[in-house]
Image (cartoon, rainbow, N blue to C red; front, top):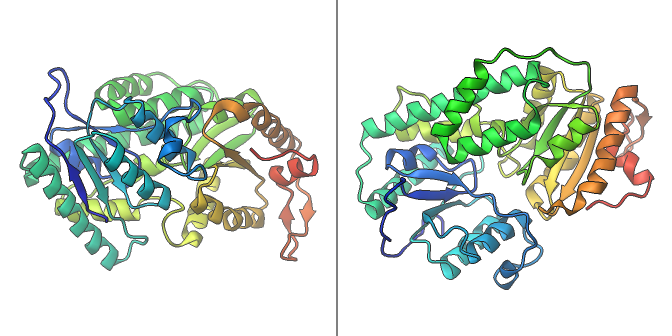
Length: 389
């Protein structure tokens, strides 16, 4: 049940670091964990072949969730004092069940999340955050005073501002900060903010390089397991100028109101930030994506999906239709969270970049019988008989 807590006696705290609490979803309020003197750590799983997780999770569940389960069963997360889940999808709920049953992590919590951002939803989520706060206080023996929460909000907002500043500069000068380094910075900012802050400030103090005339790409989807897709696009001759991903701007875009009541402000920020496919109102996501395409001056879009991700697969036809209506080429890529599909992905990304270079834009009748869609790279590859992996 959402809000349910599995708690076992606390282990001895590490002497050299704050207690670590793992999380998976950008709807987890890091501010509450930081205010409690904990270190939030995003869990990425592993790109190694999955072995142990097959014993507790079905093979047709999200590979990211199964990969994290496999890593936990290998005791790669033995240093965690807790893990926070979100009631975001069926795969996440099943991982929560397996984690409670098969691991010895002391603090395991499932946070309930509404699917919209109405006034009633914000009120409900505020109530859920209060329950989460009480659970953290009781287990870790701390008192989250308003002052501590406000301090954590200020620190989190600083992180978001610095990431947004770097993202804006990278958008204007993509050669200055390549995808792999940006990916590394984002991961570090989620796991070790003091170290990431130093790197961000050093980069922002560095003069940017000149711009290029290469095709500009936007990456859309859920979670990237590695910077491989970003690197493939750059090696093919394009610049990745922005991402609408769970590890990208969905993480750092929009701030928490610093002067409002803390839990109210947190509930409002997390429910009104750039939404993922799990949230209601696909039309809003499509509108925000089109605005991002315009802001970033993107020439094309790569829609990157993890295999068996029902929410993003459900969104894709509607997102693709919105992009096609604006004659924006889109390439659909699907990954099983392993490096094995790199060869096929490289071929398809190269086809997209080549098409963008030549500015191919041909009218096409869609399956629903309307005219004016563009041939997108996914269809182009299907005509060549390439199988999606």
